Image (cartoon, rainbow, N blue to C red):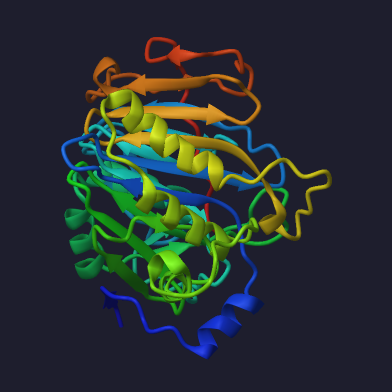
Length: 351
């Protein structure tokens, strides 16, 4: 049964024990909507190996199928988007021309249920892309998820030796927010503009409960300092609550970058692929949903690059284009005109 959860559960001993025992896996997402300024979403990508990440411009009108075998979802993209693709096989992050952002983060507890071929399937590599292709607002996307059944289907991750387990966040130019998790085969929807922070394990409800233990949120504990997902959640929420109102656009973007950099994980000496929670931050993005600008920062580069969607040709029939960040680590500033026409990448199919 589909569930709609709009408030956090009370802090309980069972939650604390779960937090202590759960593996905390990588990545952080923060939504900031300072009144009268641009709505921005920051995100980090933490992983144990280079993910061969590039930016792609995907125009309207592309026909896609869900790459989930029999009875895969089929659709035609209503909106163009700029996405960050890992290994050129999965859209993990991006923004569409309507100002909707989608982010895929790891969640070890995810359970999408046994494949039911009577329900249309959607490979996880396309989950964020499906939302960007089809919806202009969080509310529109959430209503679809509540009413139209489909099943996310997982596949093995390159280099990891096990199947992907992820959850999805969305935000829009109005400052609305939703987080979608599958932990028992059905979607659990957290839809509220107050849900501004997301990391990884444990599931979101328990993260909200844990937050209440800390001083800034009514508890007695000091701000935690580790790279564990539960600690990053608390720190991100605290930093976000402490941000001053930006005086102008430069501060609007810089302040959210400052939060993302402070919940990033430094490079570790010996990454362990069996424990992605020990992984380093590879890159960060900031999506300006108001002005439709998408920023990207690699940890291995001193420069930030950005794409202005109003300078990109995303109309139906326009070519797919790629910005190669694997070979071009020297890029800086506005790279909207530096994308090159490229054969579309193939999304990874589900097993």
